[in-house]
Length: 393
Image 1 (cartoon, rainbow, N blue to C red):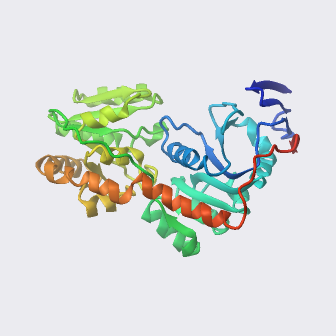
Image 2 (cartoon, one colour; image 1 turned 45 degrees about the vertical axis):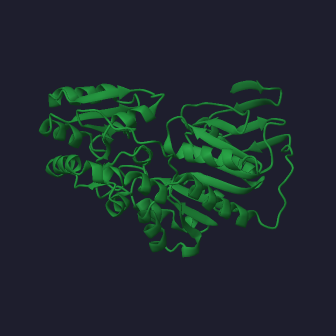
Image 3 (cartoon, rainbow, N blue to C red; image 1 turned 30 degrees about the vertical axis):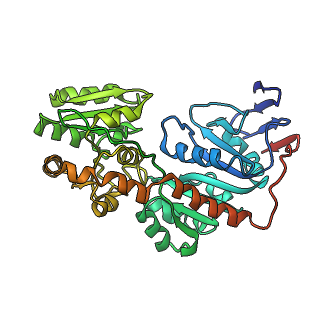
């Protein structure tokens, strides 16, 4: 048996016990660290300093925290445990035994807002039974996951999608049209700063797994770099499989591909230093809906190079803020040359495209309307402590 003790600002004092997965016994004794409230945000692996969906959840938490009683609960694979403040972390896999406890927390909130994929099957089935919103902010492993989850998806009060593809999928599997809301993630607008020569293309969507190099276009970028030695490719990486990437670059024999590995304090400066950002995915599931690297690029006035499977390819084409290309070396190389020839024209359309589709004001207002509707008719609660003990088996 493992016993952990922690105290935060004299408001949290608990003992966490479990006897292993065999009995799945999880018992939490606590006082004062959990509140009944209006909105509970649920997410996996909350990392707002660099993870896109986390930034969206944090924006809503901070925006509506002054109006409603809000808390965020994250199940984290980095095994972090934190119960103080409004952002609470529970370690995986240990906290899986506490699912009954989490569902009790859900009952203590008037709205449960879940950020995950449409194929998630740990929290979504139970959360869908309460007044709840699901924001589909990630891609499942395959489109079949939506079908497996369709009965649960149909039970959410609202499903927020971040791409027209997911909007269409929800309609096809029978979710009521009135329950489906298209809300794009927000991006901030900054003054455009011209990049210096040579022409530089930024890639800032590092794959989380080694077997995703191909689907996220790493091989395509390296082969195109061989074709276009006068163009500089900058890859922003998140530590994982960094040595494997270095080996691929060495094997490709290119000196116009550079890597920035680890957390970048000022990503804005990187976008400013580049001429464009690329999303060279092969599959619909290669990237999350509305990838934040693309949105942040538009916010800095930098055009996009995207493949047709990207969820924002239709926006790029319609708003003329970049070029859509097939995931082949010939097509990518042609797109880069085309972008260089038409750069002034396409660059001028970036900020208008961002303001039309990805403004923070629109993002907040659309969620505000959903919250107000679901909370209508009931008073905002005064914060009150939860019962002193919850036991889950």
